[in-house]
Length: 250
Image (cartoon, rainbow, N blue to C red):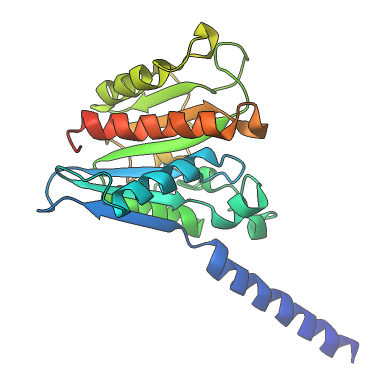
C-alpha cells in the first residue's frame, strides 16, 4: 500500500512538473515587419532573468506602440521577446522557478554547455533554445539586463553599462550611449560603452547563433530596485529606439 501511494505521489509530482514546464518554458514573442518585408532583423531580448523586469516592460511597451500604429518600420523586422522568463518574472526570481535545483535554472548560463561545446539550437534549457532559434533568424541582437550597482562606483558591477561584441556593434552601442546619457546629469551614473569585457561562455553572447553578429548587452542599474522602474524602463526604451534609428529601421 505504501509503495502504491509513493508511486502515485511520484506520478503526481512529475505530472505537475510537466504542466508547469508547458507554461513556464514558453517565452512570449511579438514580431513586426515593414511592408514590403525587407531589410535587417533586430532581436530584442527582455528579461531572461526574472529579477530584472525593466527589459520585459520596455519590450512590451514598444510592442504596444507598434501594434497600435504609433510607430511603423520603414524597413526590416523587429522581434521582441517580451517575456524571456515568464514565471521567473511573476515570482521575481532570477531563474526558471521549477528548475531551481537543475542546471537549467539560469537561462543565461545555458546557451552553451559548460564545456564550451556549441549546440546549434542552444544549450540544455528550453528557453535558451527558443531564443537561440530567434537569434539565428536575426542580424542584430539587443540583450536587456539589469545589474546590482553602477559600474563607475561599484567594483564588480556591470550596471549602467553597454557591452558590445562582434563587427558592426560599436556604432549601435555608441548611439545607445548617447541617447541614454542625454537624460543623466550625474557623471558617475552615466553609461559606459565598451567592447573590453569578460565573456561568459555559456551566456547569450556566446550562443552559436549569435557569434559574429552585432551583439549589444544593456545593463541598467536596477536589481533590488536601486533605481525606480520608470527610470530603467525609459533607458531600455531609449536603447531600443536608438538601435532602430541607427539601423535605419524607423
